[in-house]
Each structure stands twice: as structure tokens, then as C-alpha cells.
Image (cartoon, rainbow, N blue to C red; front, side):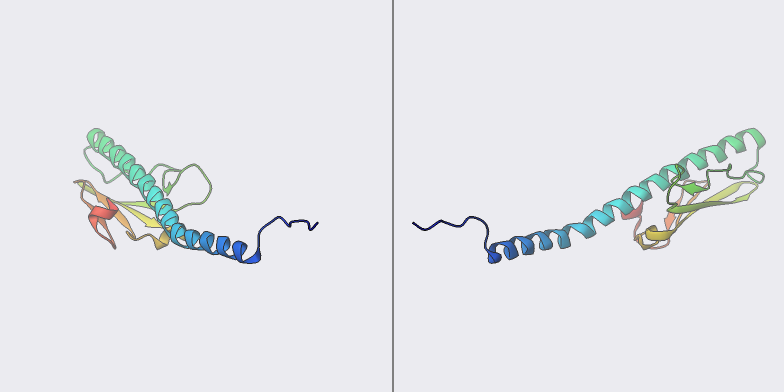
Length: 133
């Protein structure tokens, strides 16, 4: 009597590897874009928080001129680790503009540099407002 062999043939393994590689090739870019989107959402929340701080400053001092970003709030995310955005502010007596400049891997984001001003006007250096804000 002959023993029957068990297992997979080489062609079956190659087909499985091919299917897996196709799925990874299609899915990985989408995954990376979602990661960039979540980092962008975080910096937008950080920018809104800084804008609220600036508005409180203006309410108390009747000028934005002396407002500065508090220590530790000039990067996003704030929780340590890799910095994906640097935040800066330009102030005038009755206006401010917050700017978020992407860093490292986030520099490939489709929206580029994000800005928010005292009148809640939002702009981006590339991309459209619908996909960035």
C-alpha cells in the first residue's frame, strides 16, 4: 500500500502568496493615507485649542499682540514621540494666524501647511478645503 502525502503543493503556496501580495499592495497605501488623515485631525484640534486660548487672551488684554503659544503646545502631537507638525503663530494687535507645518513622514500629506486665523478662515498650501478641513 502506498502512503498518501499530505500538505500543499508549491503552486498552491505561490498562488496564496500572490493573492496576499495583491491585497497588501492595494491596502497599504490606503492605510498610510488614513494615518496621515488622523494626524491631520489631531493638528486641527490642537490649532482650534490654540485659537481659543488666543481669543481668551484677546478678551482679557484687548490685543493679540502679546499672545504667544505656551511652552509645549507648539508641536503636534503633544504627547511625546514623533512630532508630525510644528505650530507657530503670527500676531498683530487685532489679528492672528496659526500655522501648522508638516514634519517627517507627514510632509507627504496632500494638504501641506495648514493655517487658521482670527476670523476662523482655514487654508491649506495644497489640496482642497473639502479634503483638508
